[in-house]
Amino acid sequence: MALPAGYGVLVTRPAHQAAGLCRTLEAAGARVWALPTLEIVPQPESALPAAAVAALGEADWLIFVSPNAVHHGLACMARHGVRPRPDARIAAVGKGTERALHRVGLSVTAVPQAGFTSEDLAREPAFGDMRGQRVMIVRGDSGRAWLAEHLRGQGAEVAFLAVYRAVRPQVDAQPVVEALQAGRLHSVIITSVRGLDNLWFMLGDSGRVLVQRRALVTVSPRIARYAEQAGHTGPVVVARSPADEDLLQAVHQASEHHNTR
Image (tube, rainbow, N blue to C red; front, side):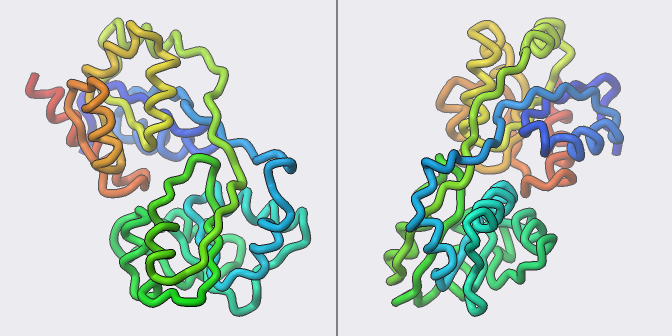
């Protein structure tokens, strides 16, 4: 199903992860603006304690929270000459992370069969009794603590290694502000709270007011609640997953609100 003629969508994914989604939306007839609100950069070596890196090679479980965690985590291990134990089990928070691990030849023991959050992963049977298990969670510098706390409650010894940072990129947001002012942008896709905060900052006060009236497509009720509590008044649609096709389906739902206004 095609989107309404001239329907404008703002994609805010990091630049290196946006191209596929932009193509998917354009193929459905969308007019797409790309404004990355996050840039993924590796942690400096000074922020990677040697003991924590070495622990990656000693853990019973390695849990990767995102494709970025896979890329930067394995690069960190390679630089330090660390390899997972042959019997280590590997978990992925979501299918995209699982695919990233498979691409580098790693087998995945646990991945959510439904959903793509830490809570979904924790429901998998492999994480029932974790007594005596050493777990390393590979993530960015602003990851949630919920999974670690849950696994500790199940008896595991849990540590983190933050292998990348998500920073606000230095890009020109004026074309997006102008598109909002002209009424050419109708939906915005946001996949993290930090990305939403950065978007508001980048657009300035007047741009924030305008974008908060547009349809918001996001990937979790938590982000939706955050947006609404911070003043978002436009329609909000939560996609089934961050996959391109699921985001496209959510944009279609958002466009139905546009058609009925």
